[in-house]
Image 1 (tube, rainbow over the protein chains, first blue to last red):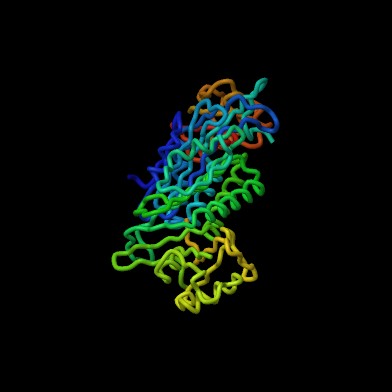
Image 2: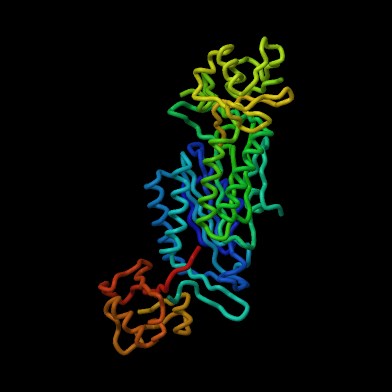
Length: 139
Length: 139
Length: 80
Length: 80
């Protein structure tokens, strides 16, 4: 089993991720799944639409994973983001980390989702009943 | 689907946990899985054996979950611990948290595993090739 | 009055429960239980600590015991 | 020299790429790209910010462009 998996996919399979992260040297596995929430600022969300500059996004994801692997001495990492239309309750991103002790997997998992949101060229459009909004585009 | 699941079981099914945690009000799901590591202090581990005072353990687990639900306003929680003999790479505990935003699910998940390790009457015996050790029993 | 034993406490005593009604003087409080155990089984003094639960709740030393209480010795826990 | 557009940048320009060789003066640097865009499409000035990537790496304003570079406009990202 490879140590790191970095992917942009149309559909996320969350259940398979645990198998990708088990490791005899690991005592802790931390998985974060970002999902589509039904309301944003009291407005009902119909769906989210994700698009990406894929070649660059994969490079930026790789940088984040490389940095975390070294900093926290991780055993395995999965970073997988979905693109396309996602409806309420559907998963859009999975960050999975497997490490010797739990401090490292919690800290690395949090670092990776926070940094992904800051640097990886993926864009999210919120679709409401009467309008669409590119998230974070405007001040 | 019930909001909280608290169980002590013989075998943990990790893959099913995501389904138990999805919620239309959730934007983040954080899952911690504790697994059996191959070495402790450079000694090869054959297996871990868990036993519990079940009636009391379930009460203490409930207290932790109740506290976290209120403090972080969580949508769903799963706390499930295994007992019996567990081999290297097998899961022994799952803490799953589903919340509106990721701050809450990370913080609550970490609080719950830390507190479980401090207060819930479950005992772990490390089985090495030539000896067994009740973890934390002696100074 | 029965005392439940778990983990290393079970190993120290050599069984999973003790019938306290067989002892010469019935313990009156949680503190008495601790005195009884460390006197009869000095290996309890070697533990990092141990707690007593009464009716499946952690109990402080001053708690007075009733005949039908479920009492348990809780050596240092190590779940997770 | 082609400019790739994503997210709101695509909406502002109305297409997913611009052929810069059709423009009157080819941009020389990343800074030139930003000047060109905000002049031709003033809605770029309303964005929180936007970055430019050259060959799929974030590029600073002083980077000089070559004819075969892949250039992309990166409006504020919002993955996760």
